[in-house]
Image (cartoon, rainbow, N blue to C red; front, side):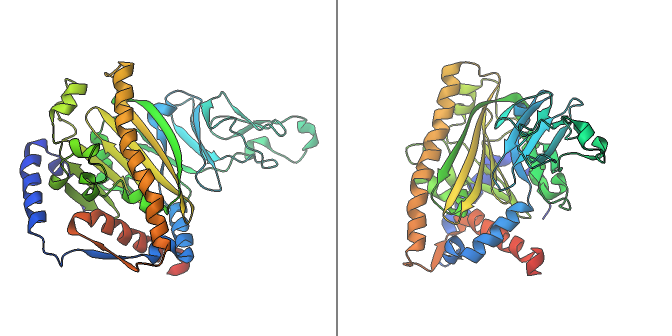
Length: 383
């Protein structure tokens, strides 16, 4: 469903609409809500199908700020086929598999860095920043090899909303069309005004959906996060706009002055409170006027998830102690979700429950599971 994202994000009407959302939630009946199957978290066939969905989806590989200059690169390694994303001399992004076209050696020297070219350490085959082979030692021993015809295997890449995205499916829909109105929400975040303050990776012993749900469920804010996020976010006034498998949510600030305490000129003009952009299957970009969190949850095993998260702070906040405080506040919330997720996974595996009951306030969780099921049904082998 197409929505007018400018109207949805209009700060002049957020307060009134949030009050209406609180009233509607209070009036909901006990019979309203949704059910989920516990099998979705523990079934091996379900998990394998979900991994296939990941292979054909757009994923956030990095922020544009991490790839600011020619030669800046990042190695995205959340699937068995790692991808290198690099900024070329012409300013464009290029992406290709981290696999040398000679004997399969890796071409990225580190997880992230800056290079003039990529050189495979196995036999020194050398590639330029577009992935084109430009030199090989002892070329005379390859009489039938035309260097101009060899390059690293390309991967689709796009830049949108201050983020670098990749997709392993060459036939996938273009990124902007895929994201729909979420692309406009991301543009409102003005990520070009923010700089990277922290980039962490964690292994969590739970199914990737349990981990993902922590970022799209506002119902639990008042309870699990009562000493952290509860003091900042007005969970009851949450507004949600669904667009295909994606969504944008506005969670009003309990203390709007918080934004201007960090950034005096913030004013909530471009981000009315906490705007949560969620891109299927697993990416949350949580926008505040003064900071941004970019969080992705990648399946490592049926009961393990790699959580990749970044915190960006507005470039005008240059005091190291203030930037560290903002990162610590985010980390405190993430830590609470990470600690609980493995215990939930164990309970899913216990067989005590077969179904889970969701309330109307957990509509984003229900929408998430429905979108996963729809994506599985659309897999070529299941049509």
